[in-house]
Image 1: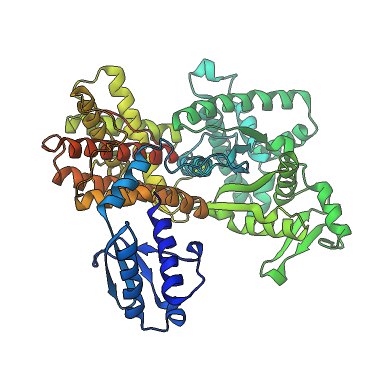
Image 2: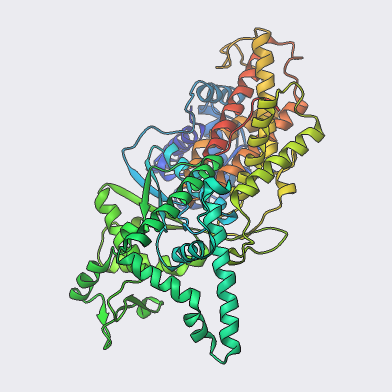
Amino acid sequence: MNIDFSLRKQIALALNERFGAEITADSLSLQPTKKEFTGTYTFVTFPFLKISKMKPEETGKVIGEYLKSNSEIVEDYNVVKGFLNLHVSDMAWIKTFRSIVSNEKNGFRPSNGRRIMVEYSSPNTNKPLHLGHLRNNFLGYSVSKIYEALGYDIIKAQIINDRGIHICKSMVAWKKYGNGETPESSGVKGDKLVGKYYVAFEKQYRQEIDTLLNSGLKKAEAEKKAPIMVEATEMLRKWEAKETETYALWETMNNWVYKGFEITYHHMGVTFDKLYYESDTYLSGKKIVQTGLDNGVFFKKEDGSVWIDLTADGLDEKLLLRSDGTAVYITQDIGTAIERFNEYPDLEKLVYTVGNEQDYHFKVLFLILKKLEYSWADGCHHLSYGMVDLPTGKMKSREGTVVDADDLMDEMEQTALQHTQDLGKIEGFNEVQAANLYRMVGLGALKYFLLKVDSRKRILFNPQESIQFQGNTGPFIQYTFARISALLRRAKETGIGSFMGDETFHGMLHEHEREVIYMLTQFESRINEAAGEYSPAVIAQYIFELAKEYNKFYQEVSIFGEQDEAKKRFRISFSYAVARTIKSGMGLLGIEVPERM
């Protein structure tokens, strides 16, 4: 039973029968009753006063009396200034609960045949993944899981930034200082090894700039003429010409990085369906420039450079081709977007998970695609997110002070170890089971903390705060699931029976049982809301609220001490439905839940 829809259908009948209106259920809406009033759902009468030709309170009473007399759902009602608060009967709640608990896929929709691509991660191959990449990956992966739950066919993609001057910097430094060092010879993970040489380049580069500044050169000229930068620029030229030795070194060092990334992604628990490489796509878009010129969308300046004027749209002029004919980054992005929609003609949305420092870039990109009259341009979305800070300060990759993703995940697992041991929550665990628990709790704490906040907001990540077993944290929710799992194991051991709903229970519900059942009915709508807002935070908040409300029930209502066997079986089923929903919801966040803690 869908109580929300059934109520709207019956309210529509009341309006039609009592006031001669022609109203459909789909045109009506209900909202949760405010905590200070009695009721579950509230119907606002003000928009219907022209139909009723009555005062708000009178209109509410007419509808309320109709529902009380004709509906099995409504047990009672009250009217507060035109707000009709409806109290749902226990019989309706129990019937609704049975439909929920018997549906293993509750909240999830079947395939709808529609396709979405979600791009996330998109790292550079000159350094390891860092804290910012963790938020990026967790967001992108979670959004893909949320849309998958709504029946979409998801393509999880990343574009790897594997070319350019920054890549050549690591290559030059390795040639100068590496002495043939490899991940195998050094025992250093490939992405970290390459990142070490990127830092070495920047250190030498700064020293050379200082020397040139002291000789009287201006800063811009010193930055260009520093010998190590000259080498990097020459190496980029050789790479673009596919000079054999340079290209081979580029392939070797990139492969080191790819293997390192694979280890990190596995640790994160994220996957990809499609990989794109900037080295394959960086020339994309150049041919589109001519189309834009022919259509008058772009214009050419006297020096031969190509631009688009977006001042009428509140933006600036944007360069698309330099005077020497070389493309800029947005030109590549235009071409890549077109290629993706050509590759997947049925693609409905293309979601870019990229930090908010690129907000302007994506405004320009999407506007250009619209002006080029691509019908799918409105399906492009920038999932923007804020920076993540630590109490120790800001990250700087050039100085080698980036918060390494692997190191932070390891640290979180170590923190989980210390915290769970201090609380005595690993009794009876063997070494492998304990290590798996630390991994689940540590990563769960990290993911939940980064996902529970609106993605647009900047975060100050506090590892100690995130690992707490109380409050709005991942471990609190995981512990609630483990508590219910223990309860279900006990029920099974004592032969209480199936968790799929007991047809013999028809009694009164506790207020916490009503509240939890109501929350269970909201799971699908919260998934839908999260998808519409591209916000895993909606799911995180929902699961926290559900776990919190269940814990109130657990503290105040007896389960195994209940003398009424039908009521006891109902409460076991009730607990099972909550655990299943917590596991499903946390799964949408990419978080595992342990059955024992």
